[in-house]
Image (cartoon, rainbow, N blue to C red):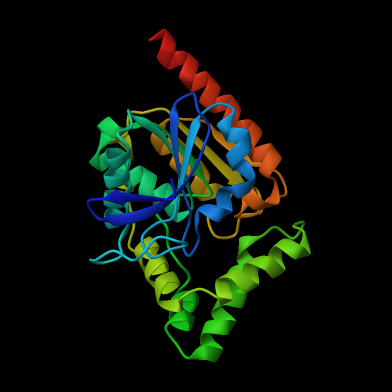
Length: 262
């Protein structure tokens, strides 16, 4: 595809897979569809995969309006409509999980299931990160160094950490700051009980940004099991793509079988 025209503007989408349920993949703050790259082919074995660059990220142009979780959810809704998809499984990482949750509240008819990786119903952000990213070049560098340090498990490949440091340093700092401010203002805890679709919650045991406690609270609020990945930080799709893809594929296959029986 690459660019899809929607009512909120063009969105870049990476597509894989020809059969199975539609699976819309949403990246986290400051990220892009590239973060799902190692999972695209494995997931394409069980789903039609659509990995999107949110407005102003990756290869998607910026859209008008404020940057909030609700507005990002509207962008995913617009993409779903533009693609003419049936109810889709929505897979979100971190901020992407918040967007998926918001979409399940705002447009439940579009959501057949929620895959939530390294996410939570309340995404508080360390004030030092927000202050640093809003500061001068030195403060921004220190904030990004702090963020990258928190993204990965101590067991992670140092090459991954170095690659992430270069990626986040090259970002427009205004986009990263706006994303993190959107996360900091997000709190869907009072509405979790209204979400009725199947869900999978996955957290790394070494996740410093959305630690296991928050994943457990999210799973409890949705009434589903909480799955932990041992010795993994906030970026399981990069740290342990095979383990994460296996868990996601098993869940998607089971969900598709249940839907077909229904």
